[in-house]
Image (tube, rainbow, N blue to C red; front, side, top):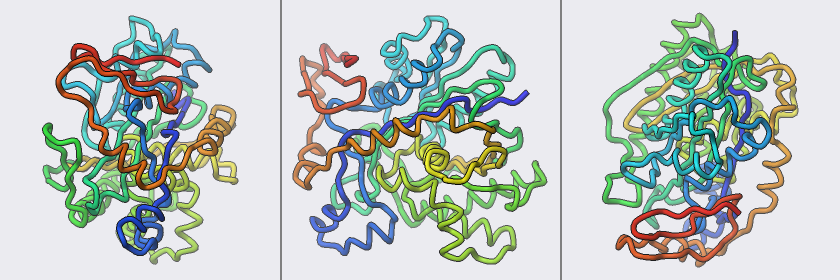
Length: 389
């Protein structure tokens, strides 16, 4: 029996900033962002959009398409949690009107959280093949204005239904894990913006990739030639090129040419290039992009997957794309979502950045912007209020 991803949906906010405008405002060459990082646009959530509304909007098409009667487990992976006690999953549980018999929990380990959730859900479904699980990954990547991390900001959410005999991707049982206590990226409870040692984080990401890959290779007996395509966690788009080149070196293979990299990676990078970093959603945003946009039929192909969470936790694993997978995608919906986005000017971006959530717990209502099917309406007596639209 195969277990894996039966449905896969992605959501990004309706607003974006073109990084050419950010480069102009910062007085830097646009190529530093567009070529150096590989980023073109940054998704910008409005004040009435948060990880709960994004995750619920990502999950809604899955619930509408298949119902929730067999859903036993909801796991929400995020590093942008909205409450120190209550799981963000329970807010989504209410918005989607899921069964009261469905467990709902939150999981955190930086950008790795959704992979931990996926592996846990696969084990649960393997033990209960008649049931399914819903995995959510949603984050808002936020750094200080004018910091090196600013152009990599972004926001977005993924939702995955995990089931037996999946229609999209059967997850292989083998994996390679690397865990190590480092301080390459962190966000203390008293800060809204994350802190990152960018060069160090890149080195840890790549070293962890090699370690996880070697353990995966030992467990599976597979080499790089076993994969039709790879997908990587993407703090910025060009990181995938660095990762693929490092894997070639670790495997003793010649360095890939720029043409090789485009052929191998290009289809998985398109969405991230236009949203920025989505943290827990990032790896699976790349998978959605690959499956939605690759002109080649990938049915039967094995895909390599590398998940990295600063701090650090890394895992290399794989899955086999199922024949007929395109019928289970939401590609047209994703295209329409990207086509309908609204561009901000620089001042609008900065104004939104400075809109802080009140901390006095009093009555506060947000103006209505363009969101998905749900919005964060405001606060009342320290309680968050959500609305379905």
